[in-house]
Image: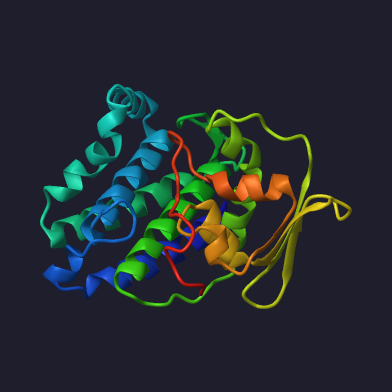
Length: 261
């Protein structure tokens, strides 16, 4: 757990440092993600960092909150941001910092295989990875809103792995049959290393930079707005539906929304 918690710490600190110096107008700037503001993004991250903490420390309260929110799926995302929206910007930032540190303190001592409640139960390692993915993805929204370029880091490997692991989920959550054909994924990490999954002989293939793949599976980019090489019908169908996060089926931006990075 030390490695994934260290990487989650670093990603959270990167985003905190980015937003800490923003003025009030910038905090209320609209991001490309469903019209959320930067303040909304941080409120959402903070809420789910708290939920991850409760998953590891107080499952009774976790379940009570989760069930209450699950009864109103139409307003689910708005409800997750309500507490943060009501706070001043300094109070929101302090709240997020407190919840993030408490989450990390709760997760790091656990056995990586410890099962924790979430939408579907998952291991402690998987929950930490999911929090890294969410922090990175919503952080990307903030970078986009501020028209800033972010440098890829090696911790992207966790997100890429989660993206591959949610191949089946990407189809099933959209009501589609999960293909039986295997897909080979070969990604170039930020230091030039190659990360790969799936059989080398597979005809269906996805090749390119890890950052591009992570942007697609977190629905921050359409695959046609990246430099990914997507070969085969199954690979193309996957990239159209890819969803590395839990929750109801969602859709990323259509092709042509962003210029290639």
